[in-house]
Structures are given as C-alpha cells and as structure tokens.
Amino acid sequence: MPLTPDQAKIIKATVPILAEHGNTITTRFYANMLRENPDLNNIFSNTHQATGHQPRALAMSLYAYASNIDDLGVLSPAVELICQKHASLHIQPEHYGIVGTYLLAAMKEILGDALTPAIHDAWAAAYWQLADIMIGKEAELYRRADGWTDWRDFRIARKQPESDEITSFYLAPVDGRPLPAFLPGQYVSIQARVPGLEHLQARQYSLSDAPHPSHYRISVKREPGVDGVDAAAHPGYVSNVLHADKHEGDIVRVSHPYGDFYFDAAAVPADAPVVLLGAGVGLTALTSILNSLVVAEEADTSSRRPISYIHASRTTASRAFAPHINHLAATRPNVRKTLFVSRPSAADVAGRDYDVAGRLQLAKLDAERDLFVGDARARYYVCGPERFMVDVQRGLQALGVDEERVHLELFGTGGVPKA
Image (cartoon, rainbow, N blue to C red):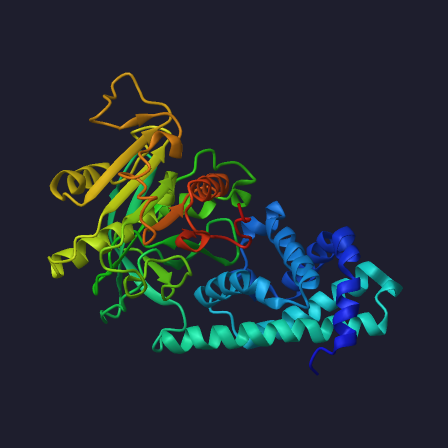
C-alpha cells in the first residue's frame, strides 16, 4: 500500500523517537538479522558492524528519511550513493524483504507499546516506498551492466608497490572476455575470503588507471597497526589481507564498476579546465581521471584542456605515482602539478621531491594558474579524508566556485556533509 498523507504525518512525528532510540534500534536490527541470516555476513562489512559505523549510518539515514518524508528530493544524492554501492555488492529485491521484516521487528522490540499499530503500518508503508525506489534504481544499474550482475573471478596479474604504503593490483578476468569501460573515478568491489572470519568480505576500491579492455587496476593503501584480536574490526583489515596474503596468480572476485563520482567527458566542454584535488590515497580516483584525460588527448591531439593535479601526502615516501605525475607535468604543457608534503624528510628537496611544504591549503595555490577560479567552465574533483573534502569544498565556494561544479567522492555507508 502506498504511503498516505496521514501516514507521512505520523512518520514526521516519529523524528524525536528516532533521535533518541535510532541507534539502539539499528544495532538490534543488525544483530538479529545477521545472526538469523548468516549468509548476509558475506554482504555486510564485519568492520562496520564491529565499530558500530553501520548501525549509526542507518540510524542517521532513517532520521533523514523521516525528517524529509514530505520532500524526498533532498535525499536523491544519498539514495544514488547507496544504490551504486548496493549494485556493487549485488543486492537483490529479496534482500529488501528481509531488511524490512527485521527493521520493523527491531522497532517493536525496542519501542514496545510505543510502536502502535498505526505507527507500525506507517513505517511499513514508508519503508516500502523507499525500497521500491531503490529496487528500481538498482535494476536500471544492473540493466546497464550488460549481464555482469554477479561476482566475476579475476586473477591478480601483477602486484606493483607504488609507495611505502600503497600497492597496485592489476586484475585480469579469468574468463578472458574484454572488460567494459568505466567512467574514470568509479570503483569496483573486491570480495575475498578473510582469515579468521567464517564468511567473505567485500570492500570498494577506486579504479586507478584509464579504462583498458584486458585489465583493471586498483591501488590499495595498507593501514598500519592491524594486528591482535581486534584486527578484523580495523577499517584497514581487508586491505592488509590484500597486501600480505594475496599474490600474483591468486583469484579475487570483482564487481562491475560503479560509483557516482566520475569525470564524464560528454558533460564537460572539451577545453574546460579540470582541477584534481586529493589527499592521501584519494589520489587513486584522481589518477584514473588524469590518465583518462591523457589517453583522450593522445587520441585527439586537438583536445588540450588545462589540467591541474594537486595532491597532499604526509611524506614523500607515502605518495604513490609521483614519478608518473612528474613526467606528465614535465612533458605536457597543459598539465600542471602541485605536490604538498606535510613532513618533508631531511633528504627531500623542494622542487624535486615536492613543491610545497605543509598541509594543502588553497591560499598557497595560485587562484588562476592552479585553480582557474576565473573560468566558469572549470570542474573540480576532490577526493580524500572527509574533513579534507569539506574544507576544500568550503574554500572553493569562498573563491566563488559554484557548488555544482565541485564533485566529491562520497565513499562508505555515510557520506560527506555539505560545506
């Protein structure tokens, strides 16, 4: 049954309840559902369960949904983000039935008699209103995947260290069929068996090179300090498994590329400047965009758009692709690079190993030569830690850059708040 106007009012009235009890409800929901449906542990992140991130993210989503039940357009970006990730995990319509059943049961378990039949029915209608929207969006994503709608076996064809903490994995399909192109900036999900867990785990990794029909490349940061009994709860646990336990010739399972952070050449004027701003391992998606632009230029030498590549790292040793970036900047007059380093070593030389010492600050960049703020056609792609992205977005807005020209990579089950 569709959500009625009276039921929408009921949903709106439950906002204070969600503010107080939302996280308790979602924590109970995940615990019950995963205990009684253990196969779903292959989909949901063990890390996000152990840290409480996933229950918190769902509680925030429920709160936002109830608060905006009369203006769902506000939630469109978040819904698109979630549907893209769902598609990379091959979520199916039947999963929504399981989630709805356990979510309503958790509401009853926590709220007791406060969850009256009228409130229960309103939330059931509201849940399926949103679920049907998401099922429809995900069905369209699967339709566009041209039959690649489940995990596909890939062999690690090459494992290449890029820095003291980032390693690239070149992944070739076992079946040998050509790979579909992707939009530079998008990601794939990688599913692998994890030592110490009784189920599979999947994580999303940005594709880090231009599309190639024979292989995909991901570049994965190894997080420090992943050991001990709580290792599986560490956000970098799966990446450590890839670094330590997966070798050339090993098989991993890979999804079709997805993601709503990307450069779309058809939507940007051919001579419009592109500014790539990244920090840490956020350079992976940006390098995919950069390399794709270079490949496009090689195919059409008349296209020489200005490109500014700006990246911040803690040390020069932790920065991946530095020789490649330096080479492009040195040999292509339309490519400009600015490399920040927070802690240069005694052996580092300014102008050779880095360009600017300290954290990435827009004030240290030339507003026109580096950022092209005077060109209303310029596009900005920002990828890195959440705080970094918010700060850059806010700084660009202060320089007069329109919000719609600034694109952020919103990874994970949450998102990045508006600046």
